[in-house]
Image 1: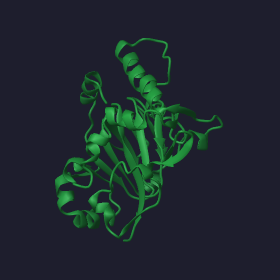
Image 2: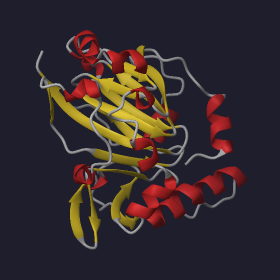
Image 3: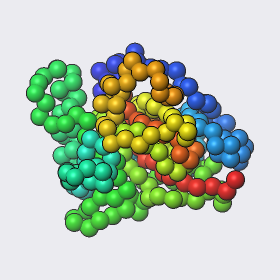
Length: 264
């Protein structure tokens, strides 16, 4: 999904991860131990490369390729906007669009504009697909019904339960989700790279300000309690209940997110 130019730009801008990181191989081999150490203790954590080590997830790599996604979902219709679920928070309705058209205009088109620095932009380069449902031939369909990906092995234990539909995301470089919080969740990045800005529950805020605007306004701010972490393709980031988080795509990024609850 990402171009060489995107990858080169991203590599020079990497930041150290300021939350715990663990090996995907360790988590795949010892899922119960991971659950007890991080989930039960409400500890945010980045699992490096879990997608490549957990047998429950490995098949999704090809499913989320550009060719496979366009073949399967090219004619389906999704809501897009500068923030996820824009229709819930703004008076203006989100724009419905075929996924094929979204990729052409907002992924490929914005990449070309960024590489040539041409202006004016014909389309928003911050528009994001982030949804639990879409339409196929006018019929609403839940993302979870498509069985795009299995739960990670550690999340398949009886102690965990889904509390939302599976949420699919796809966005170009510079798109993302604003600062917000909710129940515990994990985010599986299949392709691309994204930066997380995290706030502990005592400092968490909820915003409708697009990610790129929030970041721009706070470049020199020192008052906020914010931790950062870069998530690469194959990584899974897990957040406990009520941790504030903003995501910003450093490259064209695609994957899924899932909110969950658990027995302590």
